[in-house]
Length: 287
Image (cartoon, rainbow, N blue to C red; front, side, top):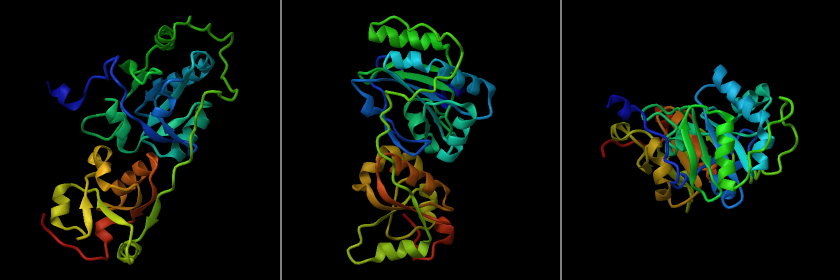
């Protein structure tokens, strides 16, 4: 019972996949919806970048990438590390497929590939079919042949033969749809945030992503509260995807919130450095 409270079972096969929109390690914007009707997708959520099992599985997927592409299937790894760390990791392993930045494990949570408590990805492999439904979802890293059989069955094809030699597939992928690059998050001081908010007919809004208790202790009077872990489900309440300033207590949670918004296409998104601990504008307390 306690285990069930701390973790959840992977998604059931046959149900619609959760929407996913994340930034790839080299800066492009990847949306799962863009692949519907023409590509199957393997999503590899992984927890650690210093783990032999993770490295071995990602390298094995690279070795067999051509077989997946023959079945019209793309491969993506998903992790909470920032894009520069993911680029270094991908380069070190020599893999060609993209690694996606999932701040605070927002996307992983939707795929039940995260902890219920901590903002981390848990080792989980998910296959999404061309119809947008889950074909396969299991904790851990399965045998590559199992994944190929699942996709081949959905395609009504035979499983492609293994490569003659265990060499990395280095040819340019013909199935990637990298989309457009995400907007960059702009780090600003609280004084600049106040100037932007106080402009005549200012389009900017201030969003506080701390907890309710922190908010009630003190907050900027012009801010609206959406805790960072609720943002993926409530961002529509902002009613805009541009001119957004995020603030938290020290700047970390607001940075993650800003990165999430740019990953789903928002632009002109700012993060207040130092957060409310260094806020130079007016403050109020209470609900």
